[in-house]
Image (cartoon, rainbow, N blue to C red; front, side, top):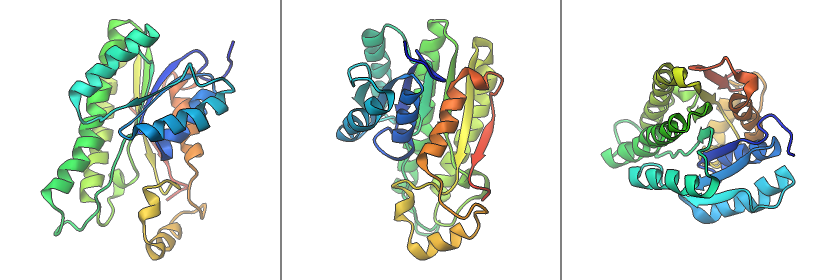
Length: 254
């Protein structure tokens, strides 16, 4: 019998092929959850399961699963619900919406395509996954926890990221609204707002810009993806049973 903060729970993590999503799979499995890792890049989620998740949980990788998913495709999201119900006989009760992309540019130079791509994945994708899986939980009369990954730029903005900051601000508003609607089903919804975390997205930031940003972080360093994953896992557990509709900064004080 596995022990841990989320022992016996089934968790779905989108954007699980790298960064925060991969770290969330690792910590959730370490704390006893069975993990379904979803990402548009199937090979990367297979690696997440084989090299990170199964090892973290001390189990073989057969109980966990890797799935290919484009979160912005509503039929793909609906099909995934059915696939999971067939395989596990129950919907996941921890949902981590971590799929996200950037297409940075100055406002005056940004293409409509780059604006729309970011909204479709970061905002609409979060909406589609949240809607489909909250519906599955209510139909199964199961309590649950949805953790949506926003960003600290949702609060303060960031140069070159009007599309990204807008999408992540939308995630906060959407999470707060969903929390109000889903509370009666005992489904909690919270948003996590990471600052500068050592992920592939941050590696695209030029070194000079990075040094300037780090000077604004009182703790003086980048965050580790695992530190964010620990918060995600706490929000997925009964330890956070009275927390819903919250937006929690994890920024080193930035």
